[in-house]
Image 1 (spheres, rainbow, N blue to C red):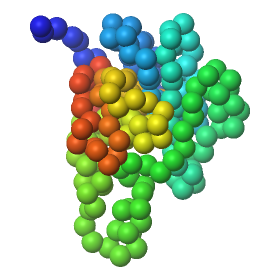
Image 2 (cartoon, helix red, strand yellow):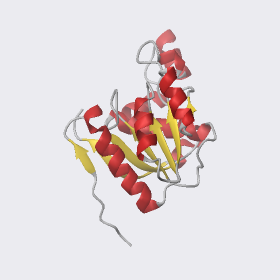
Image 3 (cartoon, helix red, strand yellow):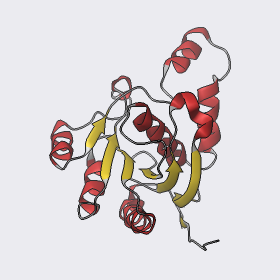
Image 4 (spheres, rainbow, N blue to C red):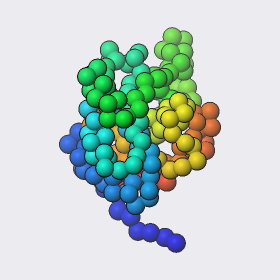
Length: 193
């Protein structure tokens, strides 16, 4: 059986796409009876928007932040927003990044040389969009933390810098079993960088 599905392509990446990305991800979650949403969130703001949008559904939301070593470069989670997420029943995860910002990057930066394998995978995913790389990465991180099952489809929501502009249906995998991960559907993504 084949289904025709529409992929939402945004003209430009960025936070202006957040509401629409969440709206269509929610629609697809209902259609597929998805029980887990993984959302990338730096300050916690996008996580709150996702939690509010899905509050009427029986869904576990996992909000994944940047690891602490990247807070100076990008943004640390806002303690009040993290508190609110937890009060809303969202599981918040802060841990080492699966693809970029991990020990491989430290080795390359210290000793030079070419790209390490995880960086190569990350930069390959960037060919689609930053949100594509981040959505896959936060799903790996949530699986590694035991917060999502690897035998059920999940929806991952991520974006470019702030907000959300990418949503995927994924069959998750642990990082050490990366090649078992499947991108089953692209719900939304930006067409241009």
